[in-house]
Length: 480
Image 1 (cartoon, one colour):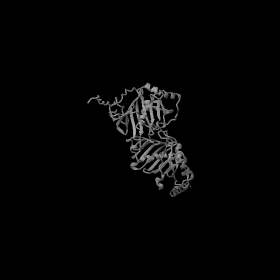
Image 2: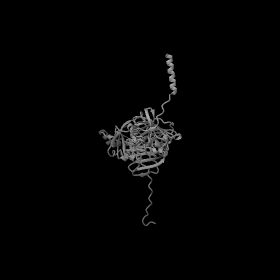
Image 3: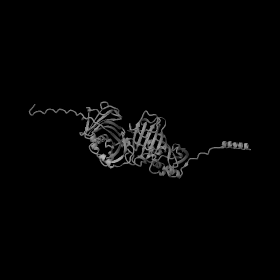
Image 4: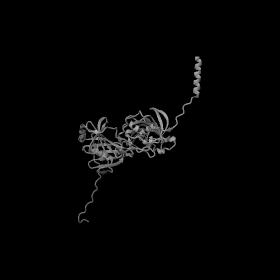
């Protein structure tokens, strides 16, 4: 009996397996009201979650680019490693804050990108303008544009273009795959990010109308029950297919590089001790005498300056050799004193040598050459050098606030900001009252730095003056 029962059960099982067929997939259909509300809330959820890890592949074949890193929607900040065969001049690390983009190019990097270091390197960052027609710009816009401070009401309208496609499982759990056009509006940032021009900076989102009407080319969203986006697949005009995977569990606090303002702080009024250190700063600098200076000045997408030299607060003089990364074999010697501002352009070697990234200090005494002298200069470099010289005579202009505590050359400093909105200055003052760095908010919406190290400064001789031309003799009355 037992053998007969077992044989019967086995036969029934085999017949059942042979006749079994999986349930047909659920057909695509219009969104329910609840699904439409989730899709409409997706960008608000992204902004509420602040940030996430991202991995993006865009384009095909030799034009393909790959991004690995993070996006912080709350500060309109991107930090990624750019790779892939189509990376070109942007291969390496990239940060974007609002409209300002800086890169740290690494042409020798391996083609496959990796997650960037959480604490960004401090050197070799430069302002950059994306190559016209490059795939990268619309991809960065899309990454920042999928967050907003209010839901999209058109997503919840019954009978629209959005459809439910299928169910899937991602690392974060089960998701619904929804199909809908990309948002056609811009996504305003909730606050001004470091280095951005003003509150309310917007990041454009590509127009969904150019993605085509074929269902296979429509944008698809992998969305969980809490309206969190885990994956996005779309096509962008001029780019091609784009696949974006979001790691919602990978969300560290990002640190912008110095050119974008450095790590965020909580501005507040100065304490009594901080105000005293600020008030005593001019006397402290005169007592020190002077300092060696190192310049890092991103003043334009085509003008990234590096420099080295001295500032003497007793002589009220600064003397620097300045290199432009775009013109590595030339230097500009700059001297500021009570007479005015003098500049001379020379080849790199006679002007101090070094590399464009780390130029040497200018020669002493200043070489003969064509020196252009003016009473003042209105460019960002002149403003920063003028502020460094003036710091030994007068304190900061206007009300001052403490932005944050920071560390430079191993010393704890208070970062104090003052000045008008279009020419803000930041003074990095250590607890001994010494000025360690001076920063200027440039016209390119980035921060230029002048690092100062107290030192004995050599005599900064004046620039050579052209010999006076002899005056012709005045003829005596009656002479022929």
